[in-house]
Image 1 (cartoon, rainbow, N blue to C red):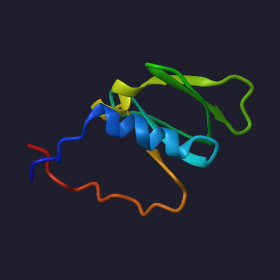
Image 2: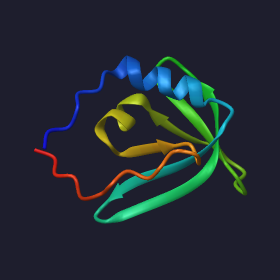
Image 3: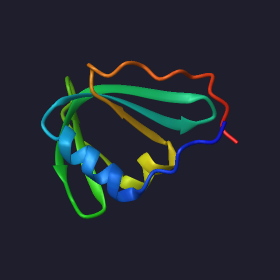
Length: 89
């Protein structure tokens, strides 16, 4: 099954809607290394956004392209989990 095409503007708008809310953040660091964070989107800039994880002193920054490419996944705690076994071709 083919993935639905997502525009960068749609990603930016979704992140703006999630600003200030609690989010679950999944970051793929490559070679089967995945980091999970729970926190809030702190600031939004023209090409990046920052996340303040709970129980951390410093913020993390990511580009909107990271979300587009699937390196970063954002979910609000109320969203149902997506199925992992969908084929991407």
